[in-house]
Image (cartoon, rainbow, N blue to C red):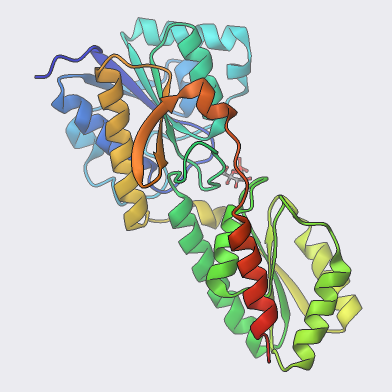
Length: 330
Ligand code: F6P
């Protein structure tokens, strides 16, 4: 048994679930047990922490979950964590259960909760889990790869029927206010237009001109990937159909993007991150976030990490446009 600075850890998943969260839970659990640390699974994220919904986890409890989507610990968005009373109750639950370290898996909302708890004396480590990839301190978040692959396969299918009917298809993908899923999927399927909340100027005329130009050149479909942060895909389809005289349909992919078995990359990276979170707690570290930067897994100060900002890659955005405009029908 190693000489760990913590004796009992809690693991929770909070916010939107993401494929790969189970791999992180499994890795954290087994890594901890290997170090002689007891593990408690906190159900339904911070909600379960506030309401003391906790169960012991042993190595067998996490068998075969590495390939399962969702999270065996369930997840929730918890408004009570924004109140002093909620935070106090969460701290009390940790104390009552002898939890001296918390692994918090989720997005930026989850991290804000973890920081608030660490300020109140609970050792916390964050693991980035969100399909949106919208955590600036890390180039990888658990679930993004799986969600992109799921969305890409769905878009490929819409593309088949869209081509058969020579239609315009507006396909809305998730990502809250971030355009990463839209950009990656748009490039991966060769979309004619990709609308990104970070840069979209709402110039529909430009899209309409693009459709008319590519049609004249013989293009039989027009795929527009629209990010959730822009939304209104149905109304957009109606306007574009009226303006072009070409059949247009909107497809909103929705929550199917969050489900399904994680990709190999999500299983692997989530495993490393889950294990690293436990290593950090065992070393006596707190208020850190595990991140992937420059091809390496690192840990960063939580508060500093959350202040970081990042823009979409200009090169990728330009490339998406260049490939679409330059080769369409010429
Ligand atoms: O953060 C993940 C995410 O799927 C976003 O892409 C989306 O905006 C949001 O969660 C949807 O949340 P909910 O499942 O609570 O409706």
